[in-house]
Structure formats: C-alpha cells, structure tokens
Image (cartoon, rainbow, N blue to C red; front, side):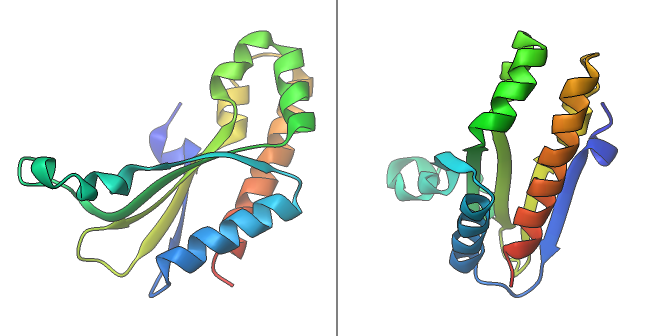
Amino acid sequence: MDINKDIVTHVFQKADFGEIIENLIKEAQLKNYRIVKIVNVDNIKEKAALVDKLSIGFQHYKIIEMCNLINCNEVVSSDLRAGVFMPVRLVVYQPKNENTIYISYLKPTAFAALFQPRAMMKVAKQLEMDLDDVAKAADF
C-alpha cells in the first residue's frame, strides 16, 4: 500500500463541521449504509485533567464507521479475512487553528488488492464510488 495513493482526502474550505457530519450521515443513509459507530476523538478536550498534559492537534476529529450489509457480505464471502477492513471508516477532522475540514478514507480497492478474488475487487470499486459520493455530498 502507498499511503499517498491509497488514502483519499477531500478538502472543504470555510465549512461548518457539524453540517459536514450531518450531510455525510444523510448521504450515507441514502446509499443504504448504516452508521455503525461514530468515535468522537475530540471528546478528549472535555477531560480537563488530561488536556494540560496532552498536545491536541485538532479542533474536531470523528471516525465514522459505516456498513452496507449486502456489500459487506460480498466482501467477506470472497475471503473471510477481509472483515479486518470492515466496516469502512471515514475520518472527518479539522486541524487546530484552521478553517479547513478534511474527510479521508482508505480506498476499498487498496485493501481488496491484498486479496485475489475478482469478486471482491468488483464490490470494492462500488464501495469506493459510494465513499467518494458520500464525501463530496458532505458539503452541499
């Protein structure tokens, strides 16, 4: 894997972080993805006793896990080990002292390339298109 080639990042200038998250979730649901979990890494700032001891490089940081059970079934059925990459994850973050918001994710075709079945690559290409659509729709 090549981190500069296999991780996609969408950049949004002067957007509202909360709206980006809302729009992303709505678009994912429209594409029949279920939001499995949202990890609120930025909640670390609420731990007052820790904040003084930690260097925090972001204003906002969320890890969004989402899954379309039909696609997931196809991926893991082609190689049961592929579940280590499921559900798919997007990170939505805003660096400290910046107005720019980023959405990044690992290309599903990058992890599918680790496995041989062509069936998995077909599903991975669809997942990749879906993730791209979801990320682009986050700032409409």
